Length: 226
Image (cartoon, rainbow, N blue to C red; front, side, top):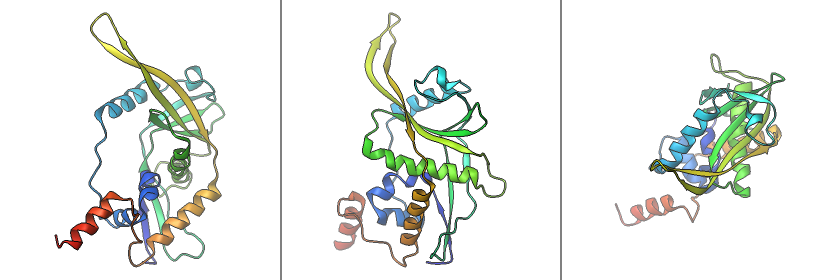
């Protein structure tokens, strides 16, 4: 499928790509998995974190965070077409980031909010998403949001571990808040993008992950004639 411009979502670069490249290929070609349902509590916590940090000087509330103020929350970004050596097709990154911070020196940082412990093996997956947003902001399509330079990427992680009951019959969760910085490496990100587009240029989907429940379901359905 060469000579095509693929539109890619940064949110798919983490677990969908890692879980099953066949499902990734099919989604980019408009054949979607059923949506997974996120428990409402995570949506509420995420929304409350974003409201709390809006326009805050983060170094005053997050240990180890550089001096800067939240400038944007949840904005769409879209990159110009990205070409890669040896490939006939291109790709465009389009998605919505969580938060952008403007540092005191005029540069910017991209933050992703996470609730609960972030496993070390998942950080490289989140890194792909953050690099995608950074690339799109620094290399935007015509009319899209443009910001540069992006000097920091990272995760702001809230780990609730205490339940507190108050005298007015209300309750709350409390826990640790930590900043996990992700080192920027554009060469590795572009190498990853080339791997993605190489898969998409194949005329047929790659083989499914043997552990992918959706692929098992589809294959079983075909096998029994449903």
